[in-house]
Length: 577
Ligand code: ARG
Image (tube, rainbow, N blue to C red; front, side, top):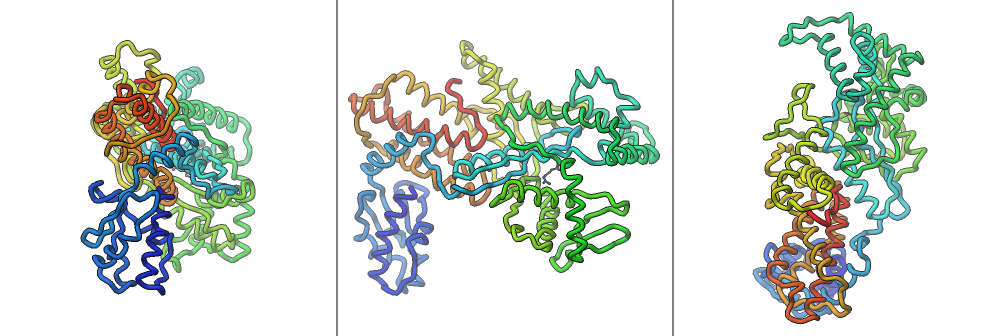
């Protein structure tokens, strides 16, 4: 559609110059003004002429009327002036002879912009804290992060996905201590991360006390835990060995979840990796006289920028979360030479990122403006019995398992003869969660409703995956598609072709706004248009062999575009359901 829009913009520009030769508007600006009307009876594209009336000193109605005769081009069928809008109808022949063949030719690469060629993006996402629960709060960073990676790759960027594991900090002192007091090697080897998490919960209860369970706080334990972590910091091999084991066990668990989502990372360099890289940055801060001592701690004062101070060193000289992030960014710039570094975390960390981005800027790193924080809203769960041993948090793996189980039950009823059911149930169950989550603008808070997410008839993952499977099965039944031209004869075919032509624009908006939900909603648009077409237009039983071939080609185009769009939001392609 971008091509169509720019062809139309050129025509509009001619018309506008006829009205006023001095008008400075550009074709690009006109492309940006073209809208998709809510209803195809108002055209396939429309120009709201009130936006031009000030510059052209004419009424919108006059402008629209003057532009109508300019609207002749291969891609335009007709145009009408209605209430100050110029409504433009795209030519069916153009869609049939230019758009659909382009999709069939480029297949999975159709719609890919190329503005990322030669550039590198580093994406920091998922990044769970080792030995703490990998819970539903991590769903956002994991799937938004991975979708942004896929989107950038699609636009030609070289992408580096980094899992910045929370693998360093006093929590490991606690865990070492807990393991020595209550741990059991075999139990942990068998129970994996769950055992670690329950040790962690137990030691926290013991340190802070738990009124409900009648446990009194024990500050001495906290001191002991700090001492164990300090031993790690100065290289105590015994503690480090335990720590490496805890990290390994946790990673094995995360990888199961990543596999279900089809997610891989290019780097697992976590917080611990930056331990020896922080002093150099602290020194730079000192040299540039950016550090201030405040109650014994070292801070960067950000009052001038309307923010609380950024904490760099604690009173005892130990480093903090922002210190590590600064060192990691410097390392990544040197290692990957990024053009953009994206960080996906919950909205609770907005201030943290604003602060250390500012510090990096004050340090004089000219790439400070290439750092991008992408925050998202909170997630809660409703209607699912997902209680865990850790109390009130919902683990991601339990959420997925519940979804897969539910989908298996539905499939058992719908299609008892289906082969490879578990894999399909996994793709659909996990896909349902991902799709539901990514249907909303990322910054919105979400309350998960399992029933709704798993339904096969709403605007859901199962619905769109089912639609994809439908397209596949039509094509499979058809066998080889005979050669011949595509013809568009019905409004449903036209609406479908118009929708498919919008793919590249959607990809561009999703990248511009760091918003995978643009793609999720677009997938729904395609599914809706395809299902209307399927219900109104016989495909394999079309009236003539030519019409049948043409409709099969449309179906194949749907399969390509849906398939690539699925890939952009971590949704697996399901050929059969
Ligand atoms: N591990 C952190 C957490 O779970 C997220 C890390 C985000 N990335 C970063 N570079 N700070 O809250």
